[in-house]
Image (cartoon, rainbow over all chains, first blue to last red; front, side, top):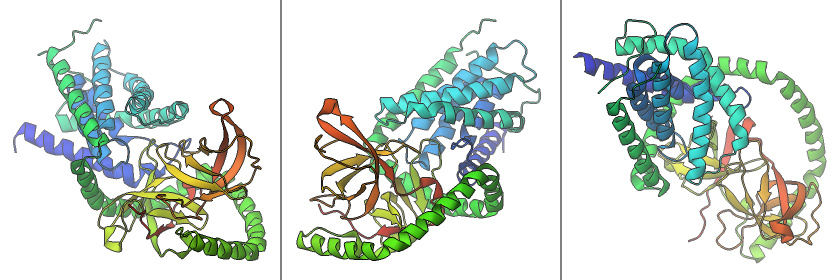
Length: 173
Length: 277
């Protein structure tokens, strides 16, 4: 199996595993009456490790996969996660010192940002999810992201074959 | 440091956004292809989810014990008091049910108490923060169909919004898209209750005359009127407060649902009843 195909297979395995863990385990571990989001977490990690291009693509795929098992509007997660993945990739690329705890900070911001964006887009398509829930849900998602983003980055570095820790590549095409 | 925005990345993002918006608009029209895909995935995911849930159950129980112990203790006390009260009301309730059944028969309204039920186990709660659905372990193979009401001993849980062979998705009463025709138990006033999100009360903000006196604690049941999606007589909730709505043109009721969506961990019943037409 050649490199890109191997990466694709590994990526698919990570996404499916994240989905199974999300619906089988994480969905029942409620904090502040909200749950973490492993599909968003992997999107953030992919963007941190490999830039906006990968972040957007991964976010789209992860969101679409998640949407298949939800009762919320189809592709709402895909749209949100693709945008978040892209923005996280840009933010990571903008940092001059890609080391230390900065991925945690970005992951926390992404948790709040994704929750807010999701709610806004939901309203635009006629799903009136309460804006009052955003702080509570955003905080929970951010806490999960903060706790797990470094191991997730480590895992995805292996998947993408990135040997240098915390290096962010931006495709200039 | 200035970031040079890669044109290729932006093009890719534009394509992905366009694809998402297209799929979103197709999904909002309830396209059969999306529905069938979701049903197919549900069939595959449900057994995996059940297995993962069984393996992780001890950890989840420990987590709930840590995060909800105080609430559980208080709730336990409250439930003991409610059980004692409920036992004393049994006789009156049986009599009222009998009367309701007879009246529904006279009015040719379907009555929930006469409809065969299918017991189902809750496989999973809401799968995301904005989901208002639970999964149950019975599906079309067991005679279930989209639209059937789902209840517990306490009252209305919701209705089946999607069904595959061995599983079904239940849209809960708290879903902001949820609507149910209700009747105020004491006055007979009819209205439509709607969900407002998790942990939020339901509201009835249409059709109730502003001069109507509705006391706190008054019960609401499904109305079962012509073309209703639900048979008559399923308890929905209790009035916790009232206020003027639509500039004083209607009386708005705030309703506490009888079911606690956080506690739907085990069994529910599906009424094998489908609305006419």
